[in-house]
Length: 210
Image (cartoon, rainbow, N blue to C red; front, top):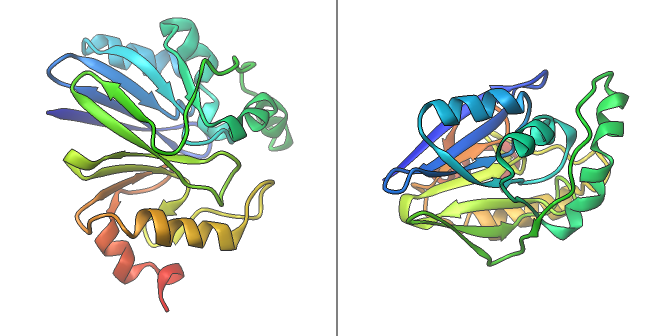
């Protein structure tokens, strides 16, 4: 069985997720958006061993807690190769919005389309989902019908494409070819806002009609 804890953190209330395998108490942190030490404390208090730090993409609001979390856990930071430049520049990006984040550490492991990340008894499939940001990936648990979509797909909305590396046509193509092909019952846990399902977005998302 799995446990999933959602933490909306930071000035943009960016969702950080703890995904845990109950059989082994191994956990991954997906997008440590802010307050890395608090993320670690919440996991440690409940007995989770953080084995991976997984990044859907590297906009500053998704990595604001990365340095502190890495310091506390030394878990490998996993990211798509195309997201590395934005990770390196995330501090400057935050400063453009009048915010400050600790200097981010470099990644430890590259992940690509089709990779399988083994977390205890769980297997996360890496989906390459570009359009919102360079090197954007999503993490899919087929056995449990759960998708961590980052900022690609939201409840009745989609990721913005007016930031560097964004492209609207690419994003729509990604959603149609990579996400809408998943079962309707797939739970979508996104980088901002409420959970939704693939079925609900297929019917109600105004960006996906026609």
